[in-house]
Image 1 (cartoon, helix red, strand yellow):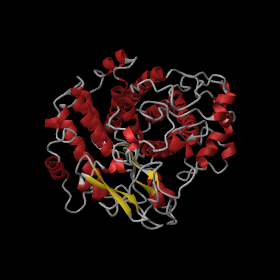
Image 2 (cartoon, helix red, strand yellow):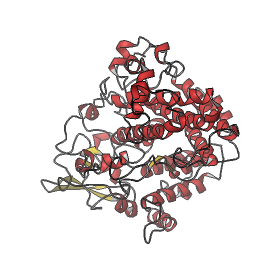
Image 3 (tube, one colour):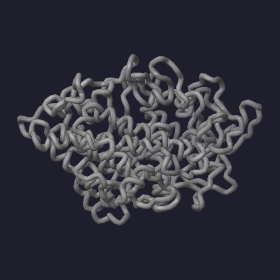
Image 4 (spheres, one colour):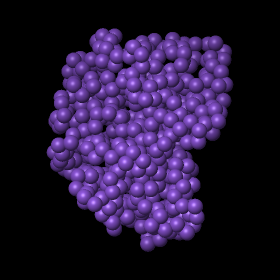
Length: 532
């Protein structure tokens, strides 16, 4: 991984300059001569979590494209690898490079906390960020440099650790963070609303967040080669329980100079210039089948449309999400015709764009409930039965879409009543009504499908990982019909599902580090938990 190492060989000079360029905090006026006495963990944590938000945002964009949450409409160029799924060492390289750049900074905080007990809480929070960042990397690349990956000049050709073993290490990493939050020395510096951009010093919520992230790892890795570790870990959760609210990062997002990265990508920059995603991206026809029993797909410019059967009725969330719903343009990746937004300055999303200063959600409440539901359905009832958590997950999805930038419900919003209506409108479908799910497989399909719907646009990386490990939501690639599958019409994948299974290591990694695994394409070498 020498591209990363090249960036970090002179880390003593560069790591602080990376921070000083950050728009949240100017740590030192002369970054090339900054010292550890100036760059202390309490000054770095906000930057670390701003970077984590940026990383999650990039993975969300990639995942959203893979599962049909969106596609580039007519007239957008430069997506040949996406159309074919023939990802190369030049595809989505920022997903790798940015994570390792940020991991170096995270490790700096961990090392400082190990050397000085005053920074114990900051070290614990850095462990959480490290676990989350490596988790993102493993889920798209598999084997990664974990044990030797952050040693800088001490080892410029680090070994790659097996992806399943890294997952085991991440579970331990989160346990270490929990221990740090519980037992920091009384002399430790306390978090404040300024130094803690996530929970403003609430240690219980930090521990609950760790439990949420740990639960995600366990559910994903259950039944794999590390199942023994997973099953034991299911009984290791402490009394703090799980956080049933959105984990929101806000390092000072504002409308003047640094706004939420999701808002920037899907709406406009602080100067008001609309982004490419805002102007040209659209939902797939397959996705729209989860909102309408009949969808209209076709060529907006030529006024040629086709009515296709859908799967579910969900007009409430459809209207909350999409401008001009139910007439939001939609089509299929690789077969767009002339489908494009209605005007050059069209912003197709609604309720997820709450404002330039909105917090970035790193873990949604709906996912917590759906993970608890899946765990319960597979023999681990950690906090309620599967049906209760399943319904709470759907309600949490409505709740997120029906709140404003301050977290207050919109006028007239009633998420609980929306769930009741949703079930009435889809009473005969086990994908909605839990009482219709009569087998374990139908239960799992319902949970993952509802997770897919709730994750639309905002949690794409998790939807993509869930599909690879479960094959849900169900797709039918026969004829590649737009309402039956989210795959590209131009796929070149030789796999039965006609998709890819991973990203390919960036080219400098394989050239400069001989330990880089030989992964020549994106169709083979799946992640260890991928059971397709």
